[in-house]
Length: 193
Image (tube, rainbow, N blue to C red):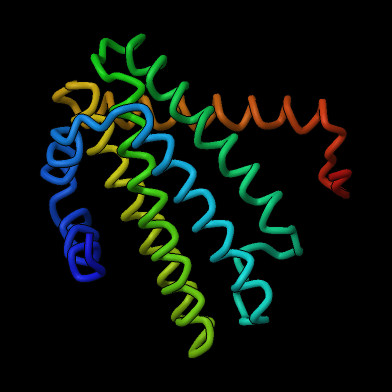
């Protein structure tokens, strides 16, 4: 995919997320392609965060420094758990989505996240207020896209069910990560990693 094609598909994701979800799911990528894409977006996002932190731009991705390797591990864990929860909880709610479908859509969202982080960092160099507005817009757009993606992947035909899945999946992810961090000895006051 060319850079222009990537940007066109990114824009299409904003204006017609359901169509993009159907397009992506029609690819029926195999496990190897999905794992490669997952690794690529994890590394890409970790590098973007690391570069933003190293550049010293205002509005760095995290308020404290974490190595790109740790960021990559955390993101990989979060993505994996999210895929499992969104698949499992979606099926409980009557959905038909496969883990591969959910994985592909979440991988695409992570690719867009990297693009969004770069845009926010550049905006922060110009104006903190502009960067804040861009973060809010990206958050709202991300939620809207995710709801539509989950609706298509699970075949709900109900944005309300997809929203319920997103909320339940997010809560489950927070509890799971809290449990894992507790086991690792990570506390809100400091990190043992």
